[in-house]
Length: 409
Image (tube, rainbow, N blue to C red; front, side):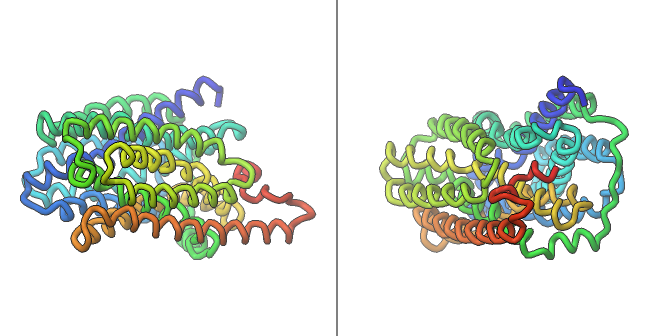
């Protein structure tokens, strides 16, 4: 594919990821309003986040298995079209159960669209630029945190929360048009049997790698899911500052994603160990300083700085491992990192909600520390296994090469 078309394709996928990220994350800034409208508790409203993430995690692989024989271009365009319609339905919700239902279906379609976008980019972008291209697409979610969440929160607080979903639907139409223009026609279909997918999922190396982003994301979303009540009830910030803090948080996640793209080379699994050590320290700092507004805000921004560093590395790591063990299941493997992230979101938001009922909002940073330590242990074990594999193949593979996805692409 010519370079100008590559850029157009990556831009269209990045904008689509921005829409998907806004669709998923904007609910964070609207929890209090939705809880009040439907007469449910804050913890119950949090199910809109954990339920979305769980539906994404469970539904995405299943839908890919069922629809994998259809053209990728058609599936992506169909997915974004239905997401637009479902956001409109969410805005028209008359009950909490109906809103939950639209969110569940939307989650599955988000997973389908993003996984196939990463697969198409991996196939059509020049090999030397694949890692960066994937980081840009995933960066659409960080941009959603910068602009989508705070703008959506502002709109929801000033025009009522359904207006936010209407705005996302309007923006989604732009993503649909760009995808229609830039996604190549005639993309070959690779049918992967359920047996091959099962072999991939049953591989213990894949499972270990899968739980690295799952636990790392759970740590971040234990706090981020309840960031607005934390700001109001723990940090004692006025509600007028919420959108500004969310904007600053999202802005820093862009830097986090850029850092992640830079470390996604060489022995990046080894580098992730350092990332998780720093994340644990920052969570401890936030747990200690959250009640002190200025220092607490600094700690919160540092959490944002660490939040997306793992994404590009873990995505490439899963593709690399799949290419080694079950090459035909590469498309299926592209879904595993977003699925792992959403499983982490579901776990973090659910456990966080349970801990709010037990010990209050101040317990959340300490729960996040626990998830970070688990991610660190899994990463250390995976790195040790990589080094052992490298020594076994020392005649052909140099130390660190196994964790470089592009070496096998």
